[in-house]
Every structure is written in C-alpha cells, then in structure tokens.
Image 1 (cartoon, rainbow, N blue to C red):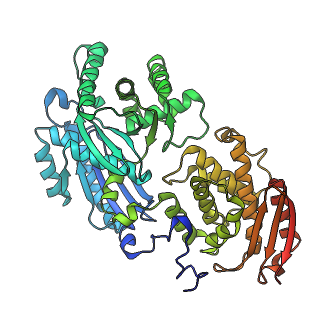
Image 2: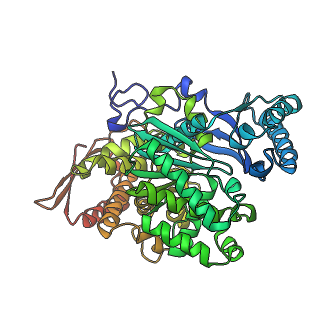
Length: 514
C-alpha cells in the first residue's frame, strides 16, 4: 500500500482518517430539527462535517408557550398561535433546503398542559409535521447527548433549563447515566405566590430532592439553555472578558455568586442592552440566576462550563453511528474545512508530518491543536494578503467548532496568525492573548512559523518535503531537504527557516538530498 497516498494510506497519525466523506456519515450532511420549548420554538438545520456540523440555518421564535401554565394548566393562547405559525414557516423552509423529513420534539409546556395533546394534533393536521412530545427523562438524555457532541468522553453533570422545566443528567466517559426532571423553569417559577423569599425556599427544597436522587456530583457542571447562556453573557460583561464566545466559556462558583448579585443590583434594561440579550429572555434571567446559585450551592461542582449544544444537537447525535460519535469533533471539522476551502486539500496532513518532529515532548492535546492548525493553514487564502493573519485568528477563535477550550482557541488562532505574520504585537487581538500563558503564546508562534516555512515547500498533497530535526541540547535545528523540495528552498524559504530557528533559539543547519 502506498504510504504517501492519502487516499489509500493507513498512516493517519493519532487522530485517524477523516470520516466526513464516508457515505454513512454524509447521510447526515443536512439534518433539520425543530425544538418546541416552553419559551421558544427553534429550527436548526445542520450541515457539513457530520461529527462537527455547521449551522446551515438557525431560527428562533420566542413564543412563551409555557407562560401562565402554572396558573391555568394550559398553553399560552397567544403562544399557541405564534408557535403554529413558526412551525408552518419552518416546514416550508426545510422543504426548500432539502433536509428531508424534519425531526420535531416538544418539551415541558406541551407535555404538561391540558391542551398539549390537542396542540400536538393541530400541528400535525395543519403542517403535516409529527410532533414528538417527550418526557423529562428523555429531554435530559437528549440534552446530555448534545453536550457529548461537543465534549466526547466527558464527565460531569448536565443541567438544562427551559422555560417550564429543568433537567439534570450525569455523563461519565461518554455515557449518559442518572437523569431527573423538575419544574424549576423560570416561566413556571415566577407564578409562585409569596415573592422572592417563597420562591427561594421552593427552589432549595426541589434541589434538595434532586440532589438525593442524583447523588454527589462534584465534577464539571455543564449548563445548557438560553437562560444560562444569558447569565454567561452578563458574567462576561461584568469581568470584561474579551472573547465573547459562549460555548466552552468557564465560570467558577464564586463567579456565579458575584454575577447573580450583579444581576440583582443592576437595571435589567440597561444590562439587556449592554449584553445583547432579548427583552423576553432578560425577563427570565433574574429568576434563572436564583436557580443557578442554588444549583451550584447544592452540588458544589469543581467548575462550570457553558454549552451551546443541547437537545437539538442531541437529536443529531442520536442519528450518528457509534464510529462517528467516537471521533474528535475538532479534527473532523478541520478536515472538512480543508477539503472545502484549501487550495490543495490533503497538504495539511503532509505539513503536519513535516513539522511534527519539532514537538516530540508535546502532549496529545497539544499535538491535536497542531494537527488542527496544519489542516486550517490555507483555508483563508482568499482573504487579502495584508489581512490573512487577522482572518485566520478570527476563524479559529470564533468558528463554531466543538472540543475547544477558550485558551485552545487562542493557541490555534495565534498559530494561524503566525502562519502569515512574523509578529503578533500591535494586532487588534492583543487583549485576547492574556487568556493564554506566555509560554503557550511562544509555543503557538513556533507552530505558526513552522507552518509558514513548510508552506514554502508546497508541492502536492502527497509530497515528500524532507525532514526536520530539533536537537534541544545542542540548540540546533537541522533541515534535510528531499530531492523534490531542494529547488524550492529559495531566499524567502531560507529566511523563514531562519525565523523558525530563532523562535526555537536554535542554530539552523541545512542539508540536501538533491
């Protein structure tokens, strides 16, 4: 078998052959799901690399189906009208996008309301869409699976808050364990008589019961749901946090307490405007903050992570074959981006193999980022040459890719910035650098300069560039060029190799097999 041919080679390194081109995976290339919640009705159409899909279309209508449910036992009449109209629109949009049959679920409001079955039947008769009304435990399972879409193999407690309910599910080594459902949704809680004091007592009592059922849960707390994301936005504003990406945003227990106090002490309308939160969502945030404080106090998690993935992503995860679930969402997304946007798809793998010897002491997590950078090194080539570094940084830090901590986004962004630029000083991204230790900033620079040099030997996707070796004790960076690559080692390539050696604090040595 040809070891250098990506189409046939089994040597794909520690992260494996990309699966997005597999027919079984590509069957998931465009999937539409509808989530009829207590507060909003949303259509999401997923597209792209099946393991780390792009959001081809995403539309949300705030219908407040569960508003008043605690008092009347029925769906909000105005919400019913708005929800039916939204679903009718979503059905027509999906037909135009070629999603195939939509998968639709309804959660707490529809399942608890007296007129829930009637509304479900009305939706089917008016739109032809079969609405699956799921119970709280199934809702918890799907939300947990959504978290696993972004964090394969993760462990902790998933807490999904909607308008009329709140679900908990434990995840351990990529599996969903115990699950519980409660009525701790803000729409339902604001109907409790007795004001804030009575509501706080009720929340505490319910959580005490949930804690008894779920047991000790001191690992990571994953927060799923619009109200939690809104609180995270406020936390970012309070802290002056530079990277406004909600997925994988981390909060400490102290931060939750401080932000809940910040919400209570500030004017809601002013906060809403500053944080970009809708009025309907902001109306629920103070109550949601009360719930979150008690959740954190009850379970005492070691840290708290915001997940933009939830029930809708869980519905997609449900349809994935196991071999696809087990793949790294970051690497799969980068393979797909390279195949779609790079000038020479497949060269990223060659580049990774060429520069990998420089990082013999790197951890698997670091090698994973280096592999991702190599796959993405050329996807922004269409940008103006003066701005490619900036576009790369934006791409890495803001793209919808799972399996990336914020610090890892900055590392990846800096590596790609240095793919096109020797210096990172003076860039508009400098406030972001503080999220990454200085030593990691320098490591990202080395990765970027290694890619910058390797790209000068650009031949073909199955090229043999030669070999680089780093001798840390002797402080020597040795380059042995292949016969094919020797003619490409011109003045600019030599300058970039010297820049790489300087970043490694090593002396450059060049040999040729030509």
